Length: 44
Image (cartoon, rainbow, N blue to C red; front, top):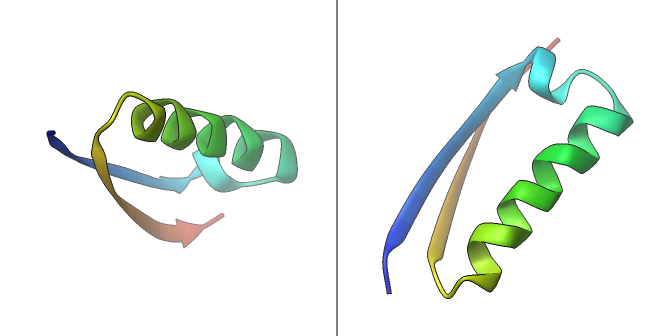
């Protein structure tokens, strides 16, 4: 099991549509049996 660090911020978390895209990327990594660490920086 790998540990994956994912960082999102700015325009990638600017609205609900983009937040859903980010959430799906996180879920995809988790579903592949990875430990997932998510860092969210300033929301635009």
